Image (cartoon, rainbow, N blue to C red; front, side):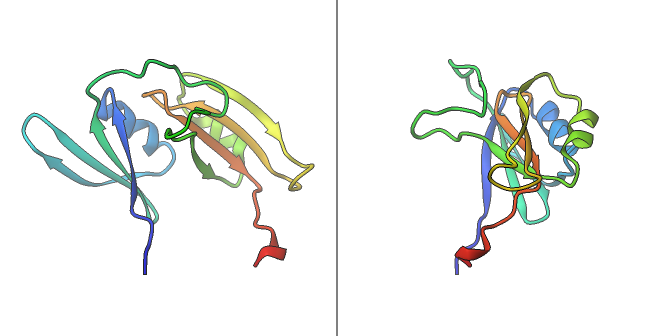
Length: 135
């Protein structure tokens, strides 16, 4: 059996990145101190993010719903009950896109895309449901 383990992110400042994701409910689960490098795991339910200190900056700033280039993560996505309330409660530097309504596809599906402190695109949405005809 295979289960999802984690996503690893390179961070400019581990403390700022951890504080951002704590606003979404993540909790510290493990800190590994290797002397010059620290690895920080944070957890939300069964989802882990592994945070590393970055060794350089990205040459392209995040835009819209994220990178459209092969081999790069487009965005991290989280579901909430009330997207407007959650986004309005966050201390975020920039909303990249949204709110957008996708009622034409799924009634009640509403989404924002924003940047985390390291420029990763984070999608916060409400109302997504599976297509029951595929089950």
